Picture 1: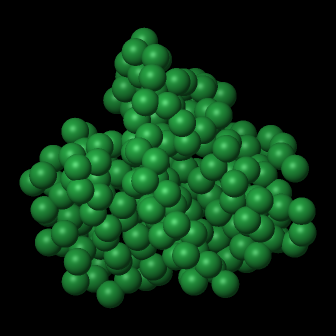
Picture 2: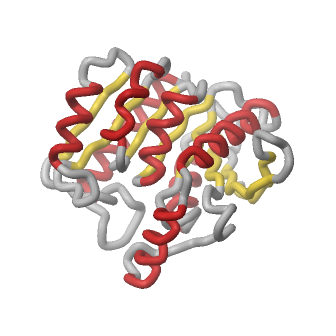
Length: 232
């Protein structure tokens, strides 16, 4: 079962929408799905539906609500891809982390699910890392997160398990940035990094030109095992 809910901001002064997919039975835990720069589009909703089928409550907050609420873009359409890049350029990730924290509060207090993990893609991968450093989320996973190399000074605050999927041919995350991520995180006891040789940004999208089937299935299987282990 799926629905759209309104989640209060941390200040309580307003609210933002979120797509929610519910399992048939009592949720074993919750997964907060963090969007790419394309909004809560069909691919993100499908990821939520898949988590719900696996027994989790899945919630995807609309993180672009301040600029273009309910925006849904197709990365395979050039004009929409470019529009998404423009939205990313105007976006404040600090706002995103606060919205993620508000969503965690909603999941625990209103939905009644105490264990919460988050998984994010692209911009969402960066926000998953930031959630691991700035919130009490129980476990985090980031796929092809951007600009994480610029935030490694926050790694000391990571208190719960974090896993990052890194495609080595990511044209948005340079080889030097990837090297810095390994140098800064490989020794962290709570962090696991997986490299995907020759794969590019967006390889685990649900459909479309960017998807690499073998890479997506491998990364998703690792993510599922990770959440089963740390949210059980």
